[in-house]
Each structure stands twice: as structure tokens, then as C-alpha cells.
Length: 278
Image 1 (cartoon, one colour):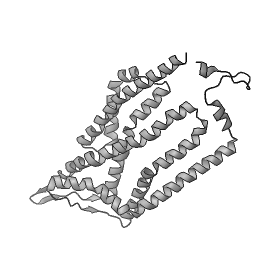
Image 2: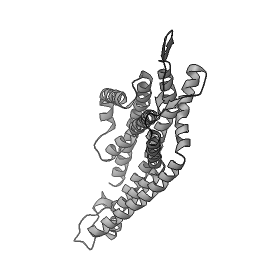
Image 3: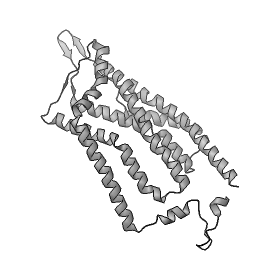
Image 4: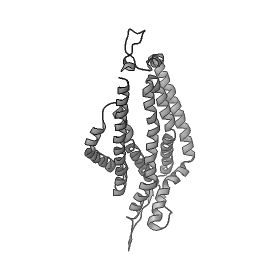
């Protein structure tokens, strides 16, 4: 490839890649890199601190928002959207709000964190690598949000409906669901993280394809193993009810099939560039 093997006139004829001059100009001593890393960490932590303060101030409202799917399930099951929750330790709800604020701040400031990571590594990337890296900065949070939306609007209402219908009120026996505030938040956070991670499958597979580690044919041949792996991940990451497990498996399998299409497109694009370069 002519543009990949062109000779740089002032370095003894060593091959270089397009954008090599830009990278050479950004070279710096180790101490400068550490200073840059510290600056990026400070910016990320400042953003996290601001986000934490905002989320903690609105922690009650955020928790009420997270309880809404529970209310929907209660209305489906009993005709009454009112839900009753408890905390069994004096400080439980306070620490639940802290945990919620930290989780909310992480989600809220993720774009800033990703930007700081990109600004730190960008000087060491070639121009084509920067262009390839940027779409993933956009796709990662969007896919995570898609997973969170499925949890909020679909999985949680049906899951809580399933649990509410397990209540018993016959004769002298009454078994009633009284969820602890900390347990409910942990359940919701676990599902959001689980779905969000599973929805990163296209990002991971496309990155592996760009690195030349996988291709479309390999993914098609491994489809049956992927089904087993996705089922196992859904069994671990989702609640024990069958609906939640199926709700995680189905979109993840669709994402796997979509990833095959993306990987094929990446391979065709790389082949076209190689052919154009001679």
C-alpha cells in the first residue's frame, strides 16, 4: 500500500503511516503524559462531583421515577397504583439515596468521562484511527440507554407484576410483598447494568473485527455457542423470573445478528481500502 509504505525523507527512509507527523509532534516525556492524565482525571472527577450533587439533591424525585414501573405493575395486578415500601435500618434510605446519586452521576457524566478518555488517547492515534474511534463514543452510551429503556418500560413492570401476583391472601394466611428501598434499587441497578452491558455486544464485536480477530463467517459458525452464552449471561444478570431472562436474551440475540452484518460491512470496507491502495 503506497500510502502505508511511503518513505519519510528525514528519518533514514523508515516507513510511516498517514498522520505520522501529527503523532511525532505530540510526543512528550513521560512526566508530561502523567500531568495530562492527572488533568483529565481531575476534569472527570469534577464532572462526577457536580453530577453527584445534582442527583443527590433530586434523589427523592429520582427514586420516585424508578418506582414508577413498580406502580404500573401494582395497577395491573390490583387495580391500585399505590405501592408501599419500607426500610429496616435508620440509615438505610439515606445510604440508598447516596448510592442512587452516585449511580445517576456516573450515567449523567459518562459523556464527559468518555470525552476525557478520548482527549488523553487521541494524540497517540492516527487520523484514520480517530475517525474509527469516534463512532464508538456515540454508540456505547446510546446502546446502554436502549438497554436501560427496555428495563424501565418493559422488563420491570412485567417482573414486578409476576412478583406481586405471588402474594397470598387466603383464609388465615396473608403473605404481602413489602419491598425494602435498598433491595428495590439494587434490583433496578443490577438490571440496568446487565442490559446495558449486554447491549454493548455490537461495539465489542465490531472492535474485534477492526482488529482482525473475528469475521462474519466465524460469528455465523459460532451462533449456536452464542445462544448458549447469551442464555447463561441472561440467567446470571437477570432476575429469576422467566420473562426477564427472555427479555434479555431476545434483544441480545438480535444484536448478535446485527453485529454479523456490521462485521461484514467492516470487512468489505477494509478490503475496498486495501484494493484502492494497491
